[in-house]
Image 1 (cartoon, helix red, strand yellow):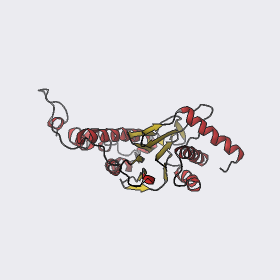
Image 2 (cartoon, one colour):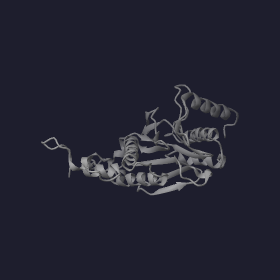
Image 3 (cartoon, one colour):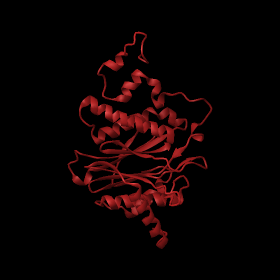
Image 4 (cartoon, helix red, strand yellow):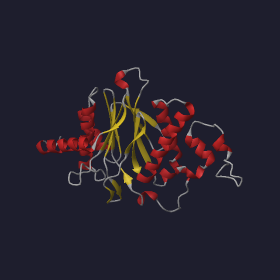
Length: 280
């Protein structure tokens, strides 16, 4: 097993052989202790009690792509650990990932997934299919099961633009996961995190197939607002501090993050509308 440089200065074989197109499989041979799920935790401590947690993420498909949006709050017990954490990121040029659960492990898993996709593309010369990306992410979650059972659970939400889709109405695809690595394709919309019950209730009332990207972005912000209204771990639009949800899209043009000005206009429109109709 290669764990570093030998005294001669030569790279271990794992670094010079072509090997697998999976970066996590390469890492499991070259430096397995760097994988999040391989680190031993101290006995007798439930890690979930001392680590910040991120919460609500929503995904909505629209005509031509998909929106992924997340609130900005991280909590630790009954305390707010962060007001401006970013839980939605591009996975590659055409897909997005949002994380809920233990924030530190989630960010590490997300970055490892980004490297996984980039590594595959460099080795194989082509991009993984959307289904392939979802399955790779499921395998990485499965490797973290031991840590999840000790309180370091991470549940991502994955969404991407499917360049190979035969049906134009199905180019925006959404995948959810369970803590054991099960992967499930969702239709239309989905949400994860402690506020997901309330976000999905809002989306159930308002979502309709074929909506535009602008309508989907407004709907995502509105669903997060409803989640924050009933879930203390979900942060709503902070108009005083000017902290707003992160809203990103994936379409034929690639991934795109809405600007602060665009999201603040959406958030203020939602809040103003609730002044007129608090129930939404």
